[in-house]
Amino acid sequence: MTTSPIDKVAAKTPDGIARKIKGLSDRAIAWIFVAPTIFLLLAVNIFPLIWTIRLSFTDYRVNRPNNDVEWVGLRNYQRILNDPDIWNTMQATAHFLLWTIALQVLIGFTLAYLINKKFKGNDLWTTIIVFPMMLSPAVVGNFWTFLYQPQIGLFNYIVAFFTGADPASFSMIGDVHLAPWAIIIADTWMWTPFVMLICLAGLRSIPDSIYEAAECDRASKWRQFWTITIPMALPFLMLAVLFRGIENFKMFDLVVQLTGGGPGNTTTLTSIDLKREAFEKWRTGYSSAYAVILFVTVFGLASIYVKALNKVKER
Image 1 (cartoon, rainbow, N blue to C red):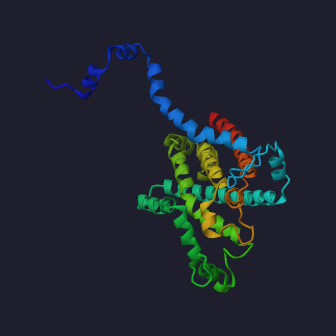
Image 2: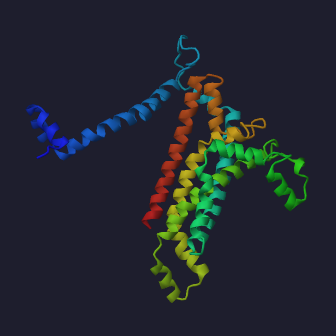
Image 3: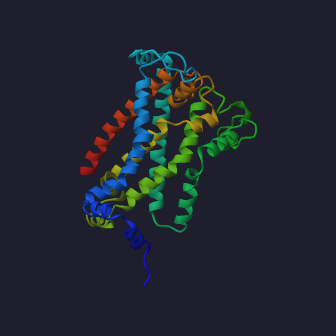
């Protein structure tokens, strides 16, 4: 009779340890297995957050580790909240957030509604539409940088075809007024499929029996859409807005690839501004306070939004 590896380990376990293990409850054993993961999360997430909060009250500079660190209290927070350049950056970030979320939700829900209708080639079109979100932001940034080139870029020629303008007369990533829209278009192209998948899951969770009952009551397709489809898919729409809002608030790599925050500071989002303060100007204490303010802003808005989402789910 062969002995299994588990039996061998059990046979070699000292009697004292074996008795202690046998005396443990299921809850204690579960904590033993979960403890390493909790410790890792604390080390990776909680400790850096606490350390960042501590540094935000100092004038510490990481490129000058031997200098004396002065405790400055709330001075960093006051300087940030009174800095007009930072408020301009916040305004640019808000502009980017609002337009990307609005376009992605509108286009994503429309695509999900169309794909939800069974037709030939449904799976093929779904795969094609989802393809952009499978690419890395660096690849998408380089791809759209090429498309936006005034001389050889396809985007300018498409615009010229519909408007009659000279393709070389404007530059999407070089014009102060067009650069923000260049980022919005690229981000919408990349992440609309993500919103579409969430909306598609919501649409397919609606039972067919509800539509059948509405048809028996002679409700029109338009009325079914506004009284059944939208209300029942609303939690999924709100979930998509939450995910994309958090992700776009910390957007960095795509903007760096396309414009680098320019021209001027037109497309300088909060994430890019924070990176410059921390790793170009080396104002570690100041940038830590900046990061804490952004964290509190996102966490506070997300908490309020989640409460609203839970109320919608309970209806």
